[in-house]
Image (cartoon, rainbow, N blue to C red; front, side, top):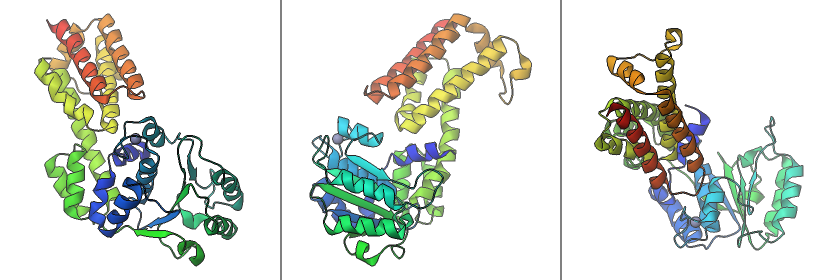
Length: 341
Ligand SMILES: [Zn+2]
């Protein structure tokens, strides 16, 4: 699994998922969902407990312009998801370096004392805050001592001992503990992981939601691949098209997977049609695949590839996911159905 896939899997988490974190959720509800945030939070816990995700969700909730924050429908939420919101600043080590030096903190200082560009707040997320150099921590401390009125800081750390106690004391502490098995299982099921895998993974994840996502993602890849192949080999009825829809709709990660699986199948069918056996690679062709490759015209291949391409563009836009996925599946079904008909 790539980092990208893991990241999109994690994007399926919502603030309500943190209810299993008991007292932390009280803060989430009051400070982020109801919008009563103070100036600084320190979110800490073992890697994989969801600290980064929580900071990103909290930032989105505070910048959301919709009715139920974070609504995931408004422009502000969209820009937070794509890290392009002008009032959301991430402070990370420079490329190839582990330590965050004092210079980026000085730059940040100039930024946070200015008014937000598009919303009511500036939000700063400092990932791996323990990697701030001592000088950078001192510079940050000065900001936290005289916090700009409309800025909220989120510091993320594995443990608090590498941070100046004076920084720690100026933050509201949110300690993330082990996730319970039932919560992990329910989240995985919501992400489209089948019941059997969800139960198995939640029992072996040792309370680490990040680990659970990593383990489950492999299984999801397999089930998406199976669903797409079944779709191509079915009788191309509307029923089989609608069976693929839930797989496609569940998460963006799965949408990307469905598209790349579809492309792989088309590429292989095309290679087979053009009779280049050496290029078949790992893909084993049953008689049904042979028949399908023979039936599809080169024009049909062109249109099918074009559909995949257009769907990819739509996925990046504001168009509703449900509409995009339905149009994709139905267009493919129509094209494949007509070549059989
Ligand atoms: Zn929103």
